[in-house]
Image 1 (tube, rainbow, N blue to C red):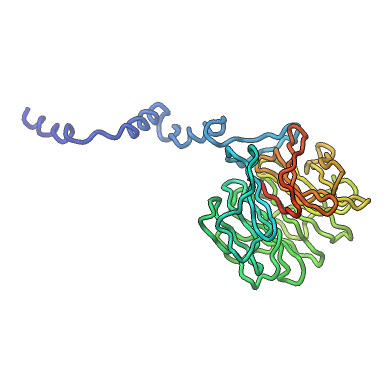
Image 2: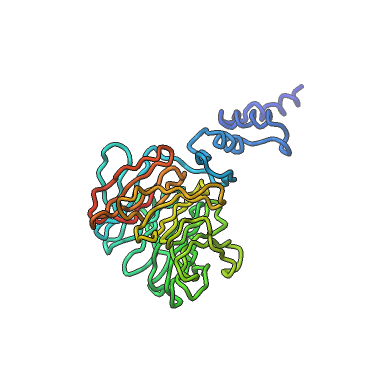
Length: 338
């Protein structure tokens, strides 16, 4: 009996596991053995996929059937970042908010902002021509390229926020490159004597859309990132005219394409890359509309409209088909949504 009590004393004196650990242990036991059970992390991910937490999967109204591999973090306030007088500004889309200067941007100037779709990092081209980004809170600055990369332009994020596409004339003409979020040597993606511009990565992260005049007129091309540059093909579901730029969303396969119509006016079209529906014109035709940017969930399009020499920003809602003016100009440009 004495030996039994002596063996029992360490068990009685051992501290009980915290309540959180006890609950997770009970849940693990209810889920089955380690070979077929699911942990609390897996159950949390399942809750997110069903709509719990702050993660959703977006299916565009009337859009193509498409496997959306990337969930989108939602925000209580959607905002637009844009360029004005060589500085970057941000305005929330709720109420009558006034634009504010973006914090953390170098005083030497910044242009062509691009918000990352998941975490809101802000990429931009800083003077005299380097590619950099700051965190959504403007607390950290990371420079990705040096001045030796020539003229840098048109940064665009991948849907997982891990890669930036950009245009550079380093090799004698405009080509498109990819660089990781932490920097390193950029990877050249396109290779052609013609000018390749306006990079936009597809929602599944596997393809690159871009504009090139390699066929004699600026045309929209798509290239699989795992194939040779010569495998790029033209996207043939567009209205007649010269393509100016293209924008993509993180959670929708639809594209917004800016086309310079035969009359010379720039207009925007919502395009299905799978060819399921005809291109949908979203411009009202009153001015020149260009520089489109899609919200991460694909439901809104911000763009620049120019009338009588005055450029301001407009927001178009895909669900309602309505547009509202965001800024009063006179020369606001390069909107990006987050």
